[in-house]
Image (cartoon, rainbow, N blue to C red; front, side, top):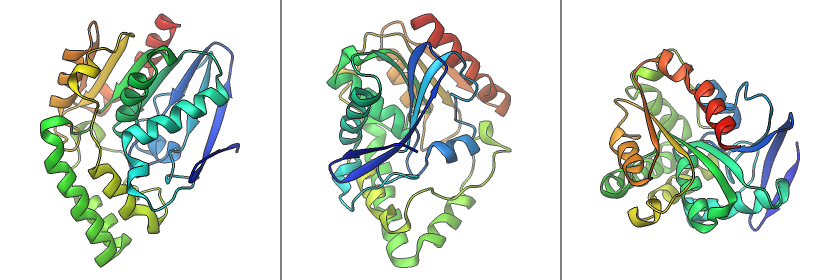
Length: 259
């Protein structure tokens, strides 16, 4: 796979080139493009007639990273994304799609460079603003668990956590990150948040916000807040795996509409 060098990291990326509109797909915290496929949130699967860029964020999957928590703030990851887009799609506006951490990265990236994007598909936004502080404390506590009790204990506790009804039937997976970097990634997540509301309200491209119900880490309140701020955006909620199975077709439709 190609590698893209950045300060403190090398990103592993791939391009499925079928011509057509450029699309970039991101993933969530402690995941990767491979793990997101197992989890059923690889919305680019079957996205025909596009140039689809997938990559692993620094410190995730096959990409490298360093033990600096600030590297994994969403605004820092947004700079990584914009640099990679300059390399793969120079001078082109792209459609961005990503869940959770990927959603946060995209919102920071479009705030930094609004002309870089022609559309957004924001999937299962994480806790934000008022709900972020409590989640940040959980991330710091989880980092302590990894350091004091080990990666396997952290993964086992994650497997026992209640699952949103829309994800029933997807396999139990472990974090796809280097074990030694996991505490750093979690502490980086604790340092970050979405851009301020007034910045999100300036997003001026066609936007779809997709969320599922009954997930404290990705509350519907975050999706509703983003959709309420972005003028003309569309909010899609899923309660079952069948609802989530329709998301790739929705993404394809949105990309065709905005190309």
